[in-house]
Length: 72
Image (cartoon, rainbow, N blue to C red):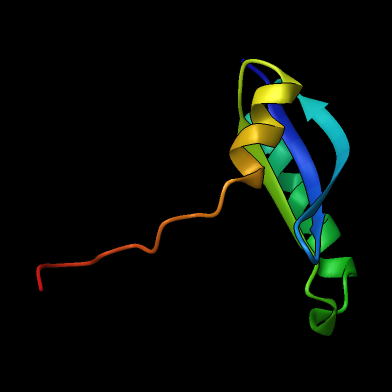
């Protein structure tokens, strides 16, 4: 399965950038884009592992659950 690279702009607008076969290639693209982006813009760059582009967009558009570390 390929890795899809996306730019996510507020308010959760997805912009497809590229598809990569290898994790390291996708990671390098994301890291390079993050380094070029000013911090105050609210723009995120994410990579996601999915079968197809539609599935990747569906996964990225869902709000993420907060991580719970330890027990309450």
